[in-house]
Image 1 (cartoon, rainbow, N blue to C red):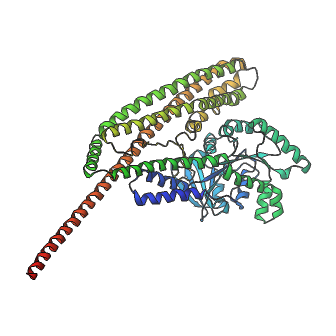
Image 2: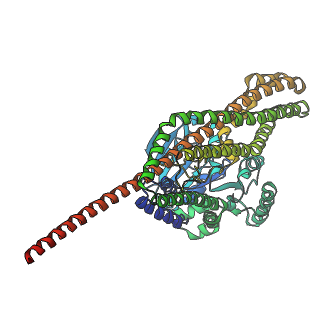
Image 3: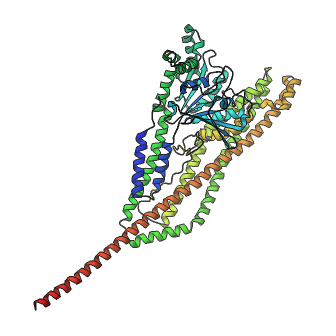
Length: 594
């Protein structure tokens, strides 16, 4: 069903990797090619199935797999995020939030332990990895079954929302019996639309519960609502009966499969994995990395050719200068650290200044909402309206500012790269290395697998606003949910009328915002510090790798010239000996003739 990965690019990278290993085994570009090749070999396509409780997500996942694997019932069941991988041995790996992993044989009983009605602590479980020999998963497909988007558990909601931005395809399960409620609309607007709509499929489930004459009208209603919410005049909406699809596959009834609508969804999945914007972006990122590696390889080849024209004295001078440079590494690294620290402080100052200005505006707007609130539903105000306002405003601030932060980090990375190379060139002047660029990769990465090499790199700015949003998500989105859950405020609600409660609500609001703002400042500073640390670490690592490659190239060329000189000297010596012998022989022959 699912297309194979882009094998042409994999083979292309592999061909250059093999040739480089043979001719330039110490090349710094070789490491980039090896990493890219490994990333493509270990890459996964991730399909996330999301939707509210009771919308048939697990039944739909089972239908795609062709087996009754996920627990499914009329009551809400999925209480963990479940990622299904291909595996020859059916197993369940329980990944815990403390880093531990439990491994079990895949049985319905094991999965029942982690349903909504089971007695377990969801905060202790990060997600489940399920391995099953399904043909759907053979081409490195990961199928992710999520808890309901209306799940009130903050930990589960946070994990679900962290997987969504990385998904190659999102299938949002809707219900034909209750088309698009407020929670679904908020989920689409707050989480899905921020990452585009090209990779989103909308599956209207329970067509088996709708009278045939009502199907067309219901689907048209859903389509109009989706057009309005998404701004997409042609949302990918499919009529579906997950129950019939699963029954058809379990019982090998082709007519049930055909009328269920699942084949149209599967065809859309196949099409998106080949031609969707996310698929194109992934391939473009790989090609970009390959291009950088080839450019670096070309520079190394040009330098190697230039070195072949150098004399042994010139080569030895290069080696001596490289050695002097390396002996001063502690000194120039200390200067680099100080330079980076100053610029980290500048970037953090600008980001926090922008955030503080935003925070005061948000505080004033939230207080105004409370002051002018005229309704009687104080619980709705504190549990829904105010948290929604804060979430949306935070999302807007992130969208407007994280690209600017990323640009500042990119400029720092360029400055560090240029400074290192300029300083080195002043000490060691080797033709062919004049324009070498040290490239640092700060891509936000997803380890869906939980093991192996998780990096699927596509460049510094890939991810954009979502990178910092994901990092901050657990910090400022979770605390604002259930703000009215503060015990003293709930107590006040039972005792006071709305107007007399407003000062208490504002007091609780400001206390809550203070906490959120403090944690957000820490998260912003932490994000910048982590990014700057990576710039420093990767720049030094890439630079040292480049220097090692230069040094090795000079040593190899000098060794070849020395060996050639020795061979030439030995050859000349043998020729001279032969010449002497010939001369002596002639003299001997002359004496014989006398």
